[in-house]
Length: 214
Ligand code: SAH
View 1 (tube, rainbow, N blue to C red):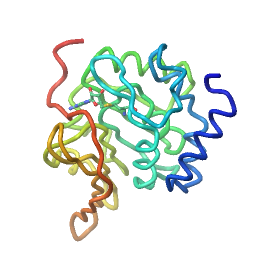
View 2: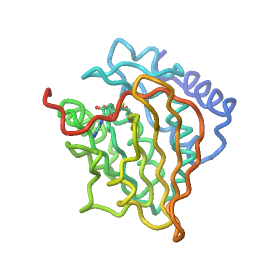
View 3: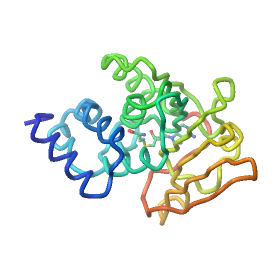
């Protein structure tokens, strides 16, 4: 059965077994109905621990990676969070259950429109989905306490570093497209940036500009 209590319980157990321990993250992962974010034929597999295709040749990230990135981002209830790469809206939904505000940017209009409607229908009204180039961030709504990028950057997106508040944290997959990438955590301190290289991952590429196709 899709989204039944058993599937959700096993899902949370799997995340715990893989090392996710932050209670707020586990609660958010339990609350957000993942089956609403995958395409209809994939709904039965929504709670499997793997990435799945969505429209525009993109993917909804693997649940473990969503939970892991949210945990290492250390989101607190008063935070304003920027996400780059809305995709299905799933990561934004998880963040919205922990932070006070989430701004999420997507370069495909189809994905942005679908995610916006989906998040609204779920009543997640502290998320704002914007269409545009997330590599440039959204300075007007910043600075952000936390920034998460959910597409792989080949080089550090400097505009995002600038929009990070002092004491802020950014988590992003960094590395060559279609090759080995790592989750990197940047902490902005008064003395400069602290870099930490975390787990190995595979993400779709972070690309410049708004998509020309829908
Ligand atoms: N966070 C998403 C995963 C999306 S996959 C989820 O939970 O479903 C990465 C997304 O980043 C894709 O939708 C892709 O179109 C988008 N993307 C890539 N480069 C971008 C950019 N420069 N600005 C905004 N979105 C971008």
